[in-house]
Length: 141
Ligand code: TYD
Image 1 (tube, rainbow, N blue to C red):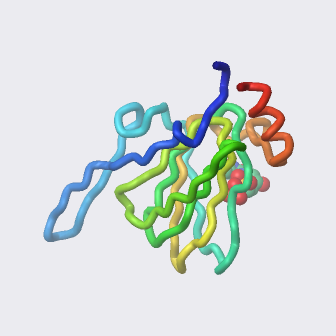
Image 2: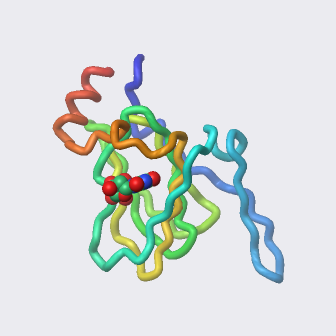
């Protein structure tokens, strides 16, 4: 196996939750709760109703997607199978390895989507054409 990944390699991460009558607290640490060294964080917000974000794969980048507030659906696709994972709690995240086509959609009002990434931003890491993704994925298999 080279860099071939399937949606089975995506996983739900259950972050620690410290329940407190004053308000709950969750946290995460790189390499402990997140299976990579975090090099970048970005967040998506103010998404107008019906808009879709993502729609790409990364050739060599891992990420974790968290609904810090509100809800949205993450669609993961490996070219053979796809699955919709709904995120609506701030203490769950989805780990997405490289070479998974992913789309984020169905954002609720005020949804806040935090994404932790294993590398700094580089357009070179993106595969933005689904046809090119399928070709690359089949080559890796
Ligand atoms: P993109 O990753 O395509 O957004 P999404 O996958 O959520 O639809 O990024 C949109 C734009 O923002 C693109 O022009 C690149 C820029 N960008 C950065 O400059 N730095 C970053 O860390 C990210 C994620 C995007």
